[in-house]
Image 1 (tube, rainbow, N blue to C red):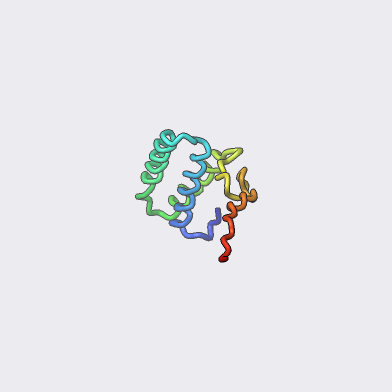
Image 2 (image 1 turned 60 degrees about the vertical axis):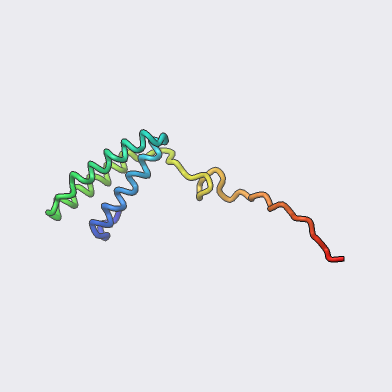
Amino acid sequence: MSAALSNPTRVSRLYRHSLKTMLSWAVQRDIFYTERDRIRREFETNLHLKDLGVVEKAIADGEAKLAEYAHPDPYTVPTAYGGSKYARNPPPPPVSPLHKDR
């Protein structure tokens, strides 16, 4: 991630990408929910940081940890780009019979 972005933006993106990566590893929702709560607690423990150098290091450590936990085959929604159903031609709608006036 780029250092040109503001810290709140980087933290938001890091949190979002962390949840998406966890969803690739824990597909079952009950496991995902406990891991989501653990990730949230981890972010909230660093909420009090004020020193810019310490904040920058915490964000860099989080980005490195995210890269370490990257899934080799991340989950993709089937109808999204890269999914198994992307760009399939849907069947045409059923044709209703034409009613002509006599």
